[in-house]
Figure 1 (cartoon, one colour):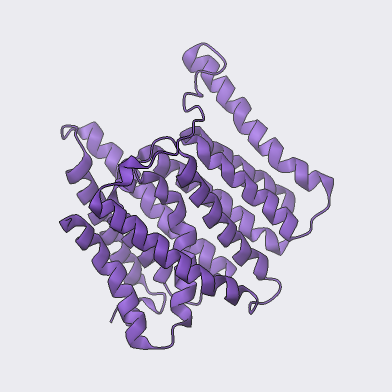
Figure 2 (tube, rainbow, N blue to C red; figure 1 turned 90 degrees about the horizontal axis):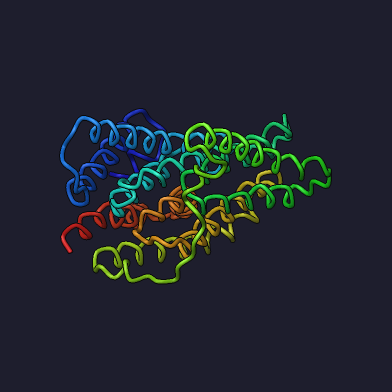
Length: 307
């Protein structure tokens, strides 16, 4: 039943995903929020929800525009179910904003394959990722995705290697100007200073441990098939699939490094993980197994809630 609904791209799919995302925010608010119900709090939650849902639509745009999956909506279903499973991701506004801008940057990076307006795409990608880093510092690591894109497309033009740095510098200068006006000094806006932690005690909750273990396990299993399937793709499309894999590895590195391990940092993993798992679902021939695979993801959030 699930496969018949999401196997084709239909408007009803986006409505279903909208309500799953709304449920994730509702559960996150009820379970985690310690503030009183005020108009400003409701407004903040509404903005975070709209940005988060816009991120899902952005993932769908990236996928459909670049042929990263077949004509289905499994990736947006999985993304919304990830939100429902790790509902703490809905309560960190900084990471929600950073992830949205990272996706804007990723959209420009993957579209490099067309070689149209390349200078603008490189600048835009670096600009958006630098903006993301203002909300959450470690998202700056996605700059590596631009470098890998230039390597994969064997671009040896020196100006193409310089342009991304101009995008980052532009954001830095805007941030300094804002800091001078708002804080009266040059670096007041840079409060989210880099820090590293390898302590994972916050993941010791039974429900959270189960959720993370399941997502990573299914992700690694799907990745094995994903890597093997890249060789079967058209030569012009292979770098795009490679970039999704690299984005997953960068996001995983962020999870490993970040100092505050609340599980909200897993949000950076959701987009590449959803695309990788969708590609695996597409190669499953047995319909019953495909249904069972999706049912596990559908049941997982409710199992986590009961633990």
